[in-house]
Image (cartoon, rainbow, N blue to C red; front, side, top):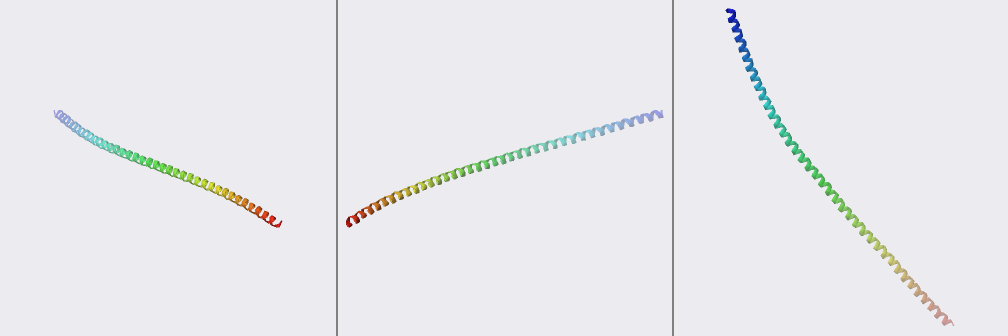
Length: 138
């Protein structure tokens, strides 16, 4: 009977130990699940924050790209305008040079015409004077 009491006491102690271990295991599981939920919440919060950062960086990158495109377009337009202005200046200078050349040629032609007319007049005067001289000598 003593042995049976000892066995029953040992069985009761074992049951209590099993019950205590089960409770401990349940508490450990509960703690693990709570930690897992906390980690999941923290991970989700970090994901949301990272997604917001990605969106902000993407927006900033797009704004920088637009600024760069605008600057390039402005530089191209300015270069185009400067090229057009320089072409117009070159054309005007060519025209002025051509007019100057034509005026010079016309001036030379006029001077030649006047010189030839003067030479012809002088020849006429010389001829007339020779005739007068010849007429007087006769």
